[in-house]
Length: 76
Image (cartoon, rainbow, N blue to C red; front, side):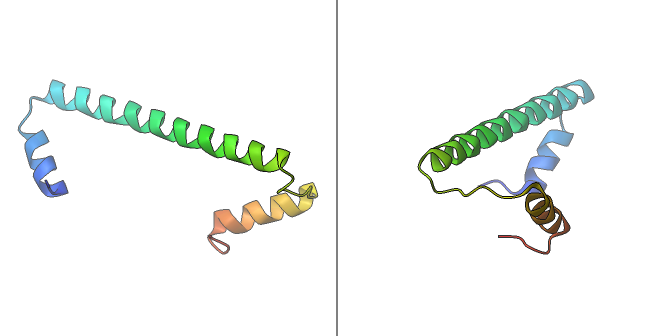
């Protein structure tokens, strides 16, 4: 398997224009991967909701949990 340092060294050997194209390709592939992950999470959440696995919560509780998660104090 190629290491990150080896990949960087290889990319640096490309002409600048090709490096920019590669960065653009990697960026867009990453976005598409995240979109697929988010869509899968949404499908699972909807299925869990319809299966009765999720309980209604107040907006205040949801916001509080989101804040704790974004602060890194309640990572799961």
